[in-house]
Length: 271
Image (cartoon, rainbow, N blue to C red; front, side):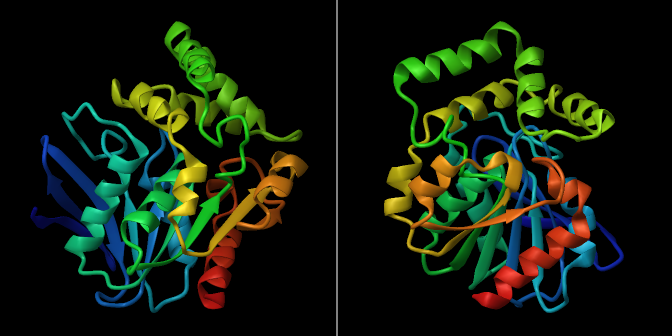
């Protein structure tokens, strides 16, 4: 495993970690080396650029690492394993390359599941897991039955574009700008394959309840108020600290980066 620089921009560096199966994980690093780390993991079919504006609003004193998961953004891989656990190993490789000893890991949507697995994988390094509108969707969690998983995957296999459009619509509360919905759809529908479908398959087969039993870190869910159900609060309220926010849609980190940065900073300060 090696790490090399691929250029700098101001106080940020664009770096790469190489793993097996011709996997290159690219990430952006900013802030002082050796400082406590904040790791940012994007959602499905998105990339680390979603956090660019958030990073600019974060307080100093942290090593901020925004990661492109395999076959998302600038990261590439020829592997055929697209489980949540394998994505967590991508992130763990970045932390190892950075010699991180303590980190808060924040993930958006699908990335929140990856963040939980990073916490399970690195219990002595990860101090807190933050989900950005993730983990509370009971249509995905806990693990789906084989019949449910086949049905979910069938929707994507039959008409991928329509399935992506459905995801975007489901994450758009009333009043969401249609132009924003269209922009998210255009970005996400071109996710690289077979990784795009593979990552969906990995997500629907992920057993969150089992993962939570082995993940000891505190977990804070920053959930869009109109998208969090009372059923989810009842089921997981004793395991998650669920903070309801009114910052836009499922992609609120893009729409309200300054407010998102403040929420992240507040969680980090609280321990």
